[in-house]
Figure 1 (cartoon, rainbow, N blue to C red):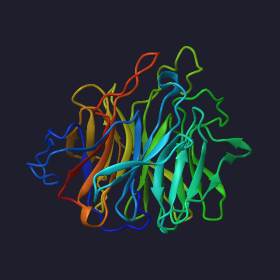
Figure 2 (figure 1 turned 90 degrees about the horizontal axis):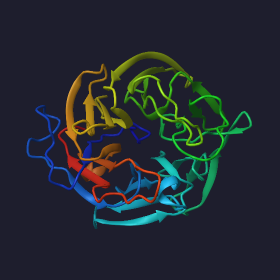
Figure 3 (figure 1 turned 90 degrees about the vertical axis):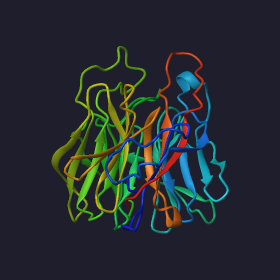
Figure 4 (figure 1 turned 135 degrees about the horizontal axis):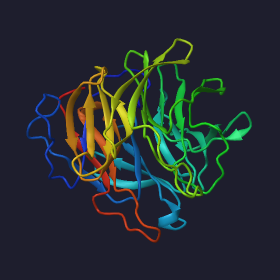
Length: 345
């Protein structure tokens, strides 16, 4: 998602794999010699890099307790000036999506699997946190996933459920809005599994990634089958913050899924994608869905964000391999935070 509140001048940068892969692209978004650089190796299931006003990159690390044991979630902080990555917060409430508001404070979507299932606000100058929203119509959210903020300070977030032992309390996998007064509004419930989202630079469109078929709760036996393909959907973002469905902009092939997303200042769409070999990476499209470029990664390109300031022409991407099996699972060293220098802003 485009994690700035105001449409600031931003270039994007993406990092992937072990630092030796070349960006696969014949268009001018990426220099022909640009390479992915891995700046952090580790983590279980990494999510949602968000660049703070000082240029630091914060990203989530989400254990899956069914294969990781009872580990707590983490939020990491990468300092591009020193190259050092440290833990910012743990336990994190199984933090997933992260965004910084106009004041530079951190807004976090906390998921399920023994997480907070809420939206929180952290004052970065003091470290103090409070809950922004945890209930809708008296019931807890399913598992807040990703979030973005518009120019008026309104928070938009998705609430699917991919994993977790907790009962599902909301009857829909919804897209919600939180207004500055704290009121919560269900905007749409027409997607199977809404995930990444981003507001266009002109503030007229909300893009939402539909992951597609996926088991919604590990307690469901047998798993859910069927469902729609993974896709990027466009909604008209109306002046009052409500949504009007417009179109399906991009559809991904069977077995391939989109996850997190962002947009550049010209409105082009960047989607982190996973799937069979050859599909993992960042897929870049025009606002109408025309393909522009593909940046290949070894693992799933989970989520991404632009740099700031002198690093505004970098795109940061977190990559991870989906956990497999039913017992202890060791993530590969290719899990990590990557970046690449691009031409676009």
